[in-house]
Image 1 (cartoon, helix red, strand yellow):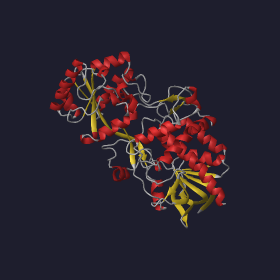
Image 2: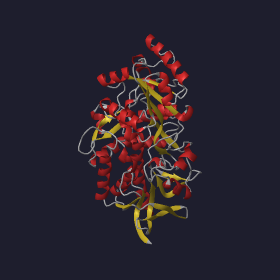
Image 3: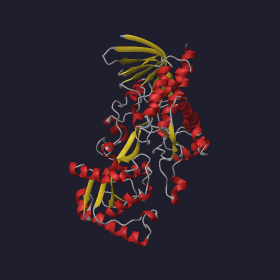
Length: 494
């Protein structure tokens, strides 16, 4: 068995683990980071950027949101059913963390909100300008995977500081002695066992988005059936299980809900094209929310999760398609390509020809309903009612913004079945505001820390999409806070 030693041991080198590694190394600690994959970054390699409040960029853009204001918005949104001190420390750290990343060479394309709410609800549900979107390597328009440039800069900084990365070497167990974490046991790619002792251990394994059994048992969804979340290979809840085995308390586990198509990245133009305030119905053909609110993907994901079969259907016709091709979409996405409708029809025809199940078309309402799996009588009644309200210029059911009240029924009808999605899982390990792991009776476990989505239990029942970039923000800030505190603990212990 190979023996190793470090002041701080990081279990997984995703975004939160990288932040912990850099923060600990900057304070002079020796750091070893174990990672089961052959690269660093984890789910952050799929993402766009973290939240920050009070950063240099925001000040330059005259964005006046303060950490205190964001804290209050967050706590009101969650009805104070989360750890207020943890949220407070995270938000008050977040602006400086953006500056810290910039000092590492991370370039941000700017700061933006994820969506904008209609005027009638803007005061209650609008997004704030907190999302610091990373500038992709080589320039270009930011989109999914833009944050790989940030991962690279953080990895380079960690390496420069002497952090030792043990890739393809998953940790199997937290070593405990007299109730204190003293190291880990791992196995490298050749099967050699490693015993690494240290002053502090930080768990940062990224949740269990690739573990269907845990998703079912802890969150109540059937992966690949009624939820299609991002499932990064290797994220199977290892860290959470190891923490529980070491005596950690449990917290409720949730999914960071949104909505998306199965295998969505291979159907990106179709997915993006339907994220519009057209007509949205359930299996019974009935509307279920004001469609001008669908830009808030958390609210929409929540709504779909409550419908029959946990599915919804977005429908538009040739007239709406022609309008969007000429004038652009009604709702602009910062995630999907801006040239959606230039490529939509080619992607649509490919998907129809390939039998891609979520999409359907028809020249009549009855034909569309049959092809899509919607109750034909219910859909026909809804479209009749909806078109009558469009003619009046007012939505008598949900008071949808009248500018989006466009009748349905001209030419070909296009339909896309919408399913619940999630960026990943949240929660599992009980921590305090110092990122110290706690027992079920709220006693700290000396030397053991947990960060990122393994311990992110700050959203209550719904992700705070109104403060976008939040999960990446929590990952990088919790990692940084844990790294700093772990060094203080480890070096005092010595």
